[in-house]
Every structure is written in C-alpha cells, then in structure tokens.
Length: 345
Image 1 (cartoon, rainbow, N blue to C red):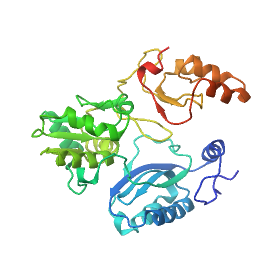
Image 2: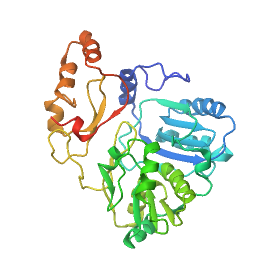
Image 3: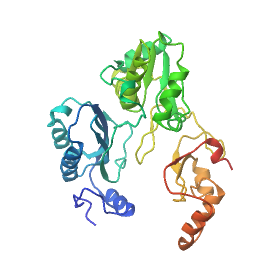
Image 4: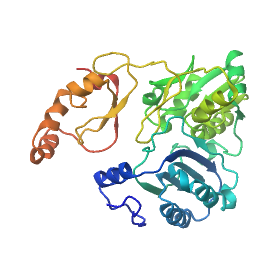
C-alpha cells in the first residue's frame, strides 16, 4: 500500500493496522505541533470540511476539535509540507496569529490518522456561559517569569487530570485528583478557598485548559491569576533557548501515540504492578479492557502488556473466544483510566 496515497475522504476507512503500516513505510520526517485559539466561528461544520480537505492533501495527521468558541489541535505534519500547512492555517484571518507549540520529543509517529471533529466546546468544562468570560483571562507568563513567581512563593496549580500529573509536575504544585477537566474545576476552586488575593499560577499541557480556568477563577473573585504561556510544551522550548533552570520534574503526558515526552530525567512515578520507578504509560493489551496505566518493561513482558491476570487470560485466549469471555466478565469497550488499586497484582 502506497503511504502517499491516502484517500481524502472525511471519514477514515482504513484499519488501525493499515494506518500503522503506512506510517512506518514513510521515508520523510514529521513535526508534531499543537495549537488552540478561542475565537468566534460562525460555521464550524464548514470550517471542518475545508480544513480536512486542505490538510489531507498535505498528508497531515492529528486530532482537531472545532467549535463555535474556537479550535484546539494536535497534529503531525510532514516537514516538507510544513510551510504549506502553516500558510493554509494562517490564511484564515481568525487564525493568522495563532501560536504553535512544537513537541519536545518526536519520533514522527504521534498520530496515525487525520480526525477533525465538530464539538460544542473545544474543551468540555460543564460550565454555564455565565460562569466565565473567556476574554477576561489571567496574565500569560514566559518561562522566566514563571520561574521567578515560583521562587517568590506563588501558589502553583496543575490543571491536568491525575493520570497526567502522576508522571510529571512542577515542584510543590497542587495536583487535583479529578479524571476530567469538568470535575477538576470545582475541585480546584475548593482547594484555593481563602487564597483569592494570592498569586496563582496555572499550567497545563499546551495552555488551552488554563485559558478557561483563569477566566473561571477571576469570575469567582481571584485577583492575581497567571497562566504558563504555551503550557509545559513551550516551557521546555524556552528552557533550552534561554538556558533557564527547569522546575518541572518528570514527563509531560501527551494525548497521542507517544503518551509522554521527557521534560527532565527524574522519574517521579512507579509501575502500577511491581512498584518499581517507571513513567511509561500503556494501554492494556486486552482490547476489551484498554485500561491506561503505568507499566515497566519487566511487567510488560511478564503480563503481555496487560493490567491484570484476568486480562492476560483474555489476551492469550483464542481470537474466536476473546469477545465472549470479555462480555461474560463485564468488560465494555471505551476509554478507561487507572486508579493505582486497579492494576496492583
């Protein structure tokens, strides 16, 4: 199958196996980029179709959400098509100045297909429109400014889900235990009670979640809200360019095939099965489980990259029996995230 001849339909019709084969057969390099912008989009469906046609032609891959409130994208772009990709995006007046965050570690396999979806929001928050004004956001801080405020004792808040912060976070940050952004907002508001006049520093992967959080906190009376410009991804870039001290420990979780990129050499988490230091996420090999958890290389080999002996039994069962056994045991396909106790053997 020719990897350069993907059909430009709006719905992917290749199997995952075929898509992976095409990606592995590529002889050129790719660049992983993320970007977002809150801006009024009158016809998100039309924009979605237009962007898909443009970017499929350039062999771009990725996951992009479009809504009336803006765009949120994580993409893999062939290096030889980068200039054309950037031109295609900036040709839209509303995206002419959108900043890019380039991946820190990139093996060119962050995505296997192009998916552009229309959503009601680019980040689901469960909030009523009266609970925030996204035009009234916090102060954006460079990496240098961020470090300075940390040194001055500002309150640092991780606006990512618990399974993201477990493998990496800023020193001394408040780490909410929510599984979704929707649940995290009220948890953060509760944890910050009494700190309305203190310096608050918000951070997330690329900045999009902090944009809404800062508006949400300002709406609830917080007066000194700041957010890390470009998120952890751009923080790492600025560290290298300006030779700044790194206050982030461990890996940055990313929502693509890589599942993480190293920001520092520290390993701050452990294998959920044996307890040894580890920061490698994996999805359980039993596709009817698909649990996202942390697993070291030894446990991956011992348990066939499964999260429990039950899932290992299903994984090793004859293909014709896997589905029946899984259904009998009550598994349902869909995204699942670990709690430590769910994988302990």
